[in-house]
Length: 117
Image (cartoon, rainbow, N blue to C red; front, side, top):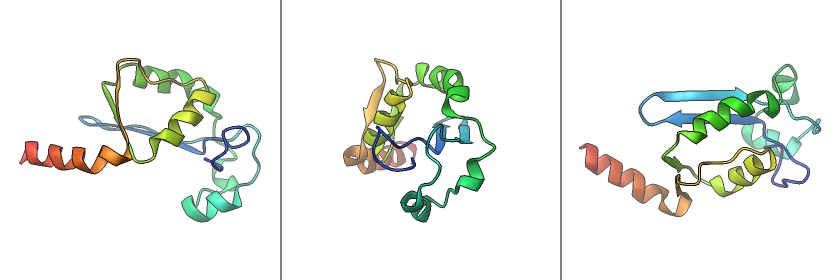
């Protein structure tokens, strides 16, 4: 994101990893309105130059929606914020999708490791 305010800021990178297939989507996103994001650039190192020739989120909506339509579970750290930005761009996770947020994330990973061991 160019920042944390859904009113003004926009998605800069969108990635989806499938547990079985690995990375199924990973794209830089050109913001529609934001032209600079110095604070975020210092953290994530995504510059305006890196996204200037990329597509906006609109071009990827169908692909992203289709991937989430088939998701049984979404796991992430801090995804509450990501979900707010996705909602702004009319990208929704399926109604029956299980959401695991940062407070449960480490327990879930430990459970997967134990189950696989």
